[in-house]
Image (cartoon, rainbow, N blue to C red; front, side):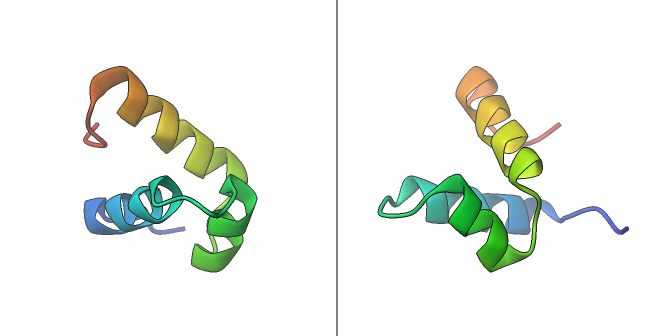
Length: 52
């Protein structure tokens, strides 16, 4: 599977951070796994960025 672009990471995380939705709902909406979205959120909280 092709990796997600940084733009896609940011769109998914900003959608979650806007509120009124769960990680599961965001993952389903963008066809990403819940685990992937959780790991991106942890990375952003730990480092302040989504870049690897």
